[in-house]
Image 1: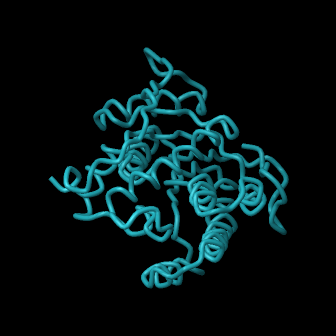
Image 2: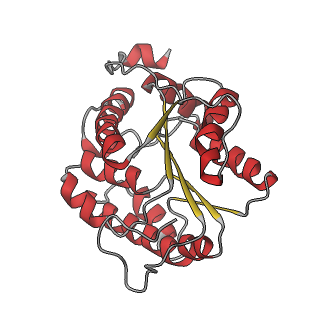
Length: 254
């Protein structure tokens, strides 16, 4: 891949082409990102590719501080965005670029796009978010796993037993009801992801289906990066956009 960024590069970042591949799997909580990253990593390793995986809040520099700050539910939107930018910059410099320079494939479980969507949903302008995360390398492929909000709700509760305060947008005071706030917040994020899909060239995959179906589509999208097409290659399908209508608190709890 080329060592190109979306804006001003960090000091010391390489300008020459990097031999590795950067593949990003994006999507909301419950869309199946982490599962797909694990499956894709295994698939690529079986094919003989060296793979390094990464994600949000994995920096040795500030990840623990972000977790502690979020526990108090008092973190300001700008401070939160800046902390995540530091976390991402540290990983970019010390993990992503070295792996790409060595010719490895880097699989990112989320990238700057989630960080931008969260910041914008909390009042930042799109231009501010673009400038803040403009030092990020341009990926070779961005796959967006798109799932209906009711599916996200069901999967999140099944996995964690409850909804996350921040992933439900409770800090935004959209609603006193956790379930209604979740749907309203996901609607805000969805609008930003729709904008970014065109701006940053997302390849959408319908994540409402089985793990096997989603993985098959992702494999077809990834295959051309390594100079070959999979049999029966076709465009990954995209679910129909639906208006997000929050269920009543009673219905959501049944």
